[in-house]
Length: 625
Image (cartoon, rainbow, N blue to C red; front, side, top):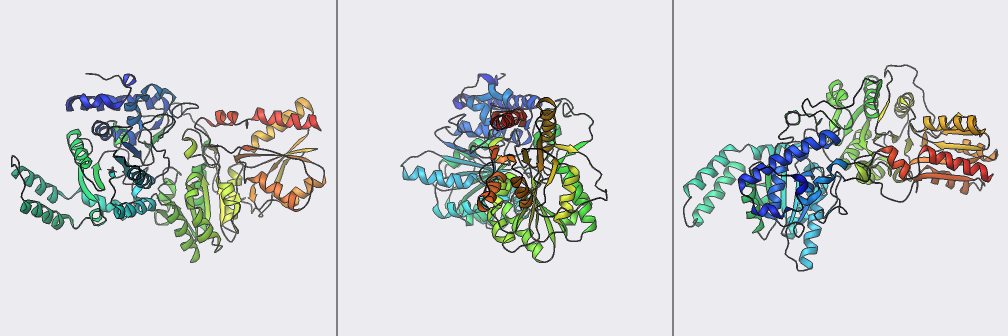
């Protein structure tokens, strides 16, 4: 039978399907995901890998009474289909459309929202504590990938849950990948567990020998345990208070169902080790070892080629910074790069080829990445930490306590700064400026174009102490990284891109180019003389220029694609307040809300931060003058 995904309202129908029908359903779900994402883009490989697991979970458990927590959350598409949301897939990750992550406002079946890794187990412990205190009996199931177990927060939760002994089911989804190939000894431990053929063979023989027996004697149970410990060693998780079950074939519905039914009966925490194949059912994704099919744009299903790509002289900002760091490393023995599992995401593949011994992928461990950089800097290196703005929030204490407090020479490359678009509120890079501005010793910069980006890299490697360089998602006009006119940018130095009379726009980043054109158009159309200032140093600010603008009686309009509370505008107001200068300052920035998913232009329009909104604000200021 063929299943129509749009006709599924809730997962209760799974209880009545045979194993054969469940297998057919899994194939139909895969086909639906591949077809849908070829049109919209989204997270492909992670979802194709968990189809059978998700179907088995919904067959055995009773969501939404039983609680499913998905670590990271980029593998919830099968879950969304089975909970009645297939009809919303044409709007996936689009403005006002369906989120690509769990979303409590979308469905009662989404009990916990995720977007960052390694959070699921702590949430599960909290839910288990609440359940038990309230005298309830439902099950709590957390699905976490082996990549997420490189994050320390997961082990804090495992340690606590093992101590509490509460009834929680942890499904370890072991696909040997996170976004890119896993690193570290934890991955090696799971590799060992996966390949203990001697244990698995012996286990099968014991089960066969005992088949049809009415009972298993105490001797047989002890013998099984002795064999297991002899072949595998005393297992790590069992020593921490968990029952360990597995490895289980994550694409065998019978085996999955049996394991989950067994887990339901236990009155203690259990880890079910499930082995899956990321990208299963779509050959380009199955063959991918670099993470290229983790998150995709629209693609041609038959060939796997991305749709709508044309020849261009632009490259991504991430690739530009990678090119710049390659040139820096050629000429500076202090340079090295650290990234928390984002070699592909931050376009560091070329750096990995050029300097394999100087690139350190630490796994999904942002806190460790920052303090490791501090350790390197303490011995004379100057490491570059390539990290998304949203993930840097997880390492604030390390930036503050371990790096800035000791004034160590660490350069932070803050990728995806600003509005990031389709990944939505968990990934928006809007909060790093308010977070970092109060940190002593730390300088914060953002380039307007490729040349200024290279100038900032050059400058960062001349300065002492920590430096943060922000850059957005998206593309930038390419620049030869070998150019020799790199310029040192004096800390706290801004530049006037366009002189004005009476009103100045102050901003930073690539949006400045649009602001200059807007100012030119206003003068042509209305005779307004609006100046534009490149506040490339967000900290320290150019207080000399601010004083000069104040003394000339200029009105200021501060525009920032970042949280307005604690941002550049806040800093400017603080300066004028402390220096007791009376200046008319207007501000435009992201208000005190979480910003949903959508394209950057759609979000800017929704937040009243579009070019048209800026134009209207300028005209209102001029008219009031």
